[in-house]
Structures are given as structure tokens and as C-alpha cells.
Length: 149
Ligand code: ZN
Image 1 (cartoon, helix red, strand yellow):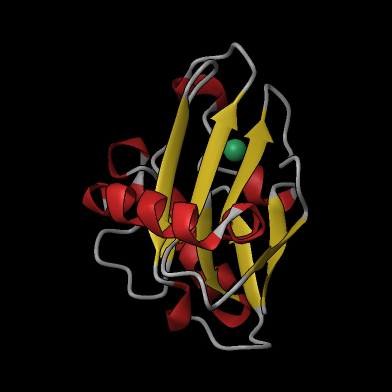
Image 2 (cartoon, helix red, strand yellow):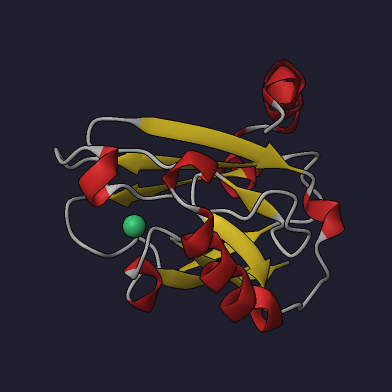
């Protein structure tokens, strides 16, 4: 969402060293089946930016086996996923302007990857956050927990 900040993040990571880099950026793989490679991730609130890369290592196109990564508070998950599915592919299965959605990637197909970054200080320490794929029906198996450290 904030691609212009990538340079600043890279500079911060260089200054902070490798350990910091590992906790401020996470890559999650998806493929032609329903599931994220990680069912749980941790985010360090001290990161200037947290970077999430979603990588589709399958071969199916986005229209048939597309995936995205959407983050909400756990209590908002159900409403956001229902509205997201209804919003359709043209809206990346996220209701436009949905304030329950804290971060979301676009929908990608096989061979594609996408990266978003957001300010993790917006997240509440110990808060209950859920991430999921909002492609219709995928959320049943494609969801996980985001922990804030
Ligand atoms: Zn999916």
C-alpha cells in the first residue's frame, strides 16, 4: 500500500541489522490449494514498517485460484470476509473503504507475488488479529493469527 516507503524501510533495516530485518518482514506462500504456509505470524511493534509478502507458487490464474492476505481484528473477521466476498474480484474481494480491514494485498495468481507494508504501531500489544484470504469460500481454510509483540 505504501510502496514509496520501501526505500526508507530498507535503510532502517540496514541500520538495525539482520535480526531486526527478520522480524519486520514476513513472506507467506500460497499455492493451488487452500492454505497459507504460516498459520501464525508475529509482528514487532518497534518496526518502523512491517512488510508482508504474499507469494503464489502455484500455476492457476487469479480468476480461478487467486489468493490475497487481509488483516482485521478477530471480532471484525466475519463481517469483513462476508462483505469482501460480495465486493467481487474487481475490488480484490475487499469492500471499498472498509475500515475493519487494517491491511490487504491484491489478489494474485500462480507465479505472482505482492508486498504490502504498514505501520505496526497501529496494532495493539496482545490484541487478537486474524488474517485470511477473502477469495470466495477460501477463508474456511485460509486464515491465521497475527500476534503483536
Ligand atoms: Zn485464497
